Image 1 (cartoon, chains in turn purple, orange):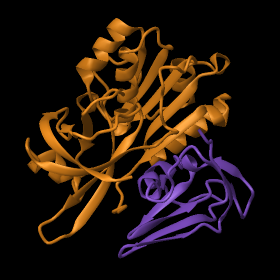
Image 2 (tube, each protein chain N blue to C red; image 1 turned 30 degrees about the vertical axis):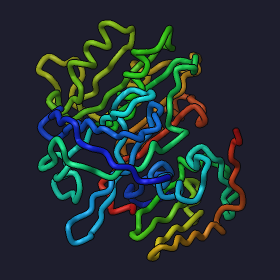
Image 3 (cartoon, each protein chain N blue to C red; image 1 turned 120 degrees about the horizontal axis):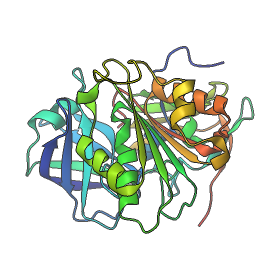
Image 4 (cartoon, helix red, strand yellow; image 1 turned 45 degrees about the vertical axis):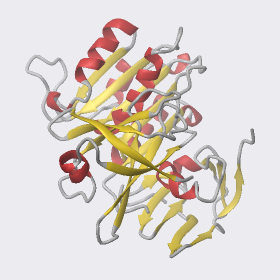
Length: 90
Length: 243
């Protein structure tokens, strides 16, 4: 399954917002898609901007990896689409 | 990651539609080549808009950074940054952002840069960083542009090629110069085979530009045999507000 249109960005575009949550760089992290099991750099995720937040989809199967929404002073993240995120520490 | 204040120190028009802004940021922590900043504008009524822009200037421990902004005619932010903004104006910046789409001088492998239009900006930071490095790895640049007038940093690219042992191939997609050997066309497998580092040199490839361009190039590189973990990508686009 691939996107019918090319109106998406990638994990690099979401990194500024995710930097409010993660101290480590998210773009270099490896994410495992909970739907298809593909392990990809988060930088390669398909990011669809949907103010006031965004949705990140698996580049392989297009299922949602992560949703991010700002509401007032709160940030809500639904990461159930990621079964694992692997960061390089140090 | 906090928002910092940057003051516009200078503006420079690169082409009819692209402008470089030099920003003084007193608390800038330094940056790596390939990283970007988020820029946030606040209108008098409190309305905010934010966009991401790649840092064009070389990596380093500096308090002045440059971004190059392409004007999108129906854009919300770029017409202001490429038109009204002037020295002394202040912008809010967040960054530097990104640790994957980055080149460090310690990398020893050959580097293949592939740019689509204003996708050249983060790759220019890499070229500028390389120019200041001691005994850096060999680079090649494949630069896809609509027409000769759209080339960013044209003089500087010529100088880098003449002085620094990097090879640049220009691919014109709409209008080629009169005596150009290749007719105006998109980058294809033949041009990749001709211009890019061969697979057996094990290059790391950095591809940046609009999403359709990046997808097309990544597919061509993969088809040519480059492993997917040696292809790093950054997609630009005319998008909505991220913050």
